[in-house]
Length: 178
Image 1 (tube, helix red, strand yellow):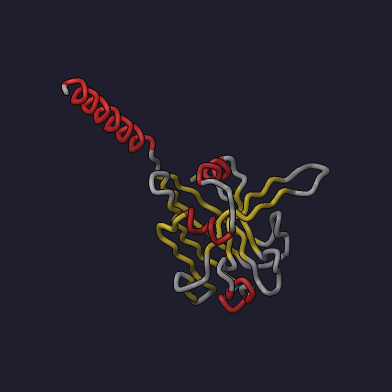
Image 2: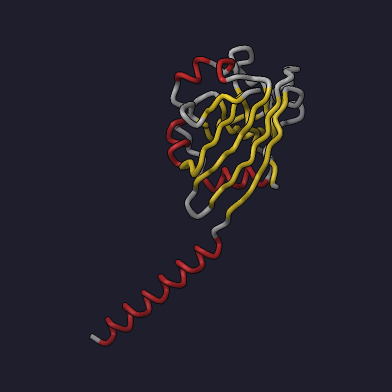
């Protein structure tokens, strides 16, 4: 009986240590993106612009986005994606390859809905604590949250706004640490 009690106490201590270590390793990461129609991969020449702040909570695996677009209204967003579950704004993993086709993978959508609000000069999207797993599920993606965070840190993620005029994306910007 004493052996079982000691084993249970040891196990509880180990679990407490692991929980403390996990909490200590949890991070609140901050990123930003400046969107334009003059940068790859969306060199459309569009005069529209955008600015985004992105927060990633590694403990809860949730993403918060505050995006302001100027020069485009919500009515310009790609109708097909507005009506679909993934919405017209996405995070893409983008890797340019010299002499080969670029590698572009849809990583996380920003579904259209009440978080998209018209403004005087465009629109704003504010998503708080968006569950990465739920977004990946909408896409049928197998990309893990850890892969997404690594791609963000490595500068391989772009934020892309798809419109009726430019269905591949009218403006985009690389997500960078802030």
